[in-house]
View 1 (cartoon, rainbow, N blue to C red):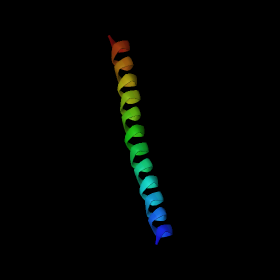
View 2: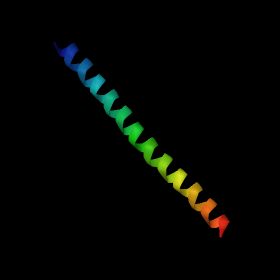
View 3: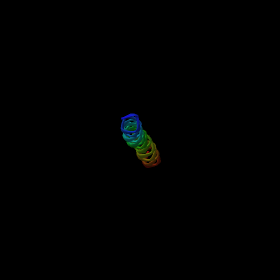
View 4: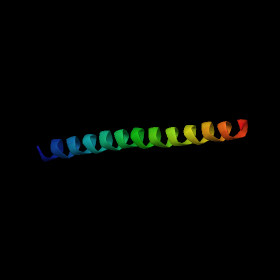
Length: 45
């Protein structure tokens, strides 16, 4: 029973890490994309 609980906690930790990884990657992607678009926009002026 203890082993099952540990296993479930491990899965939960992995899922949480994946979700946070996706969120952080998404935020970084948006920031990089926004910076590139802004630089292109400034070059046009």
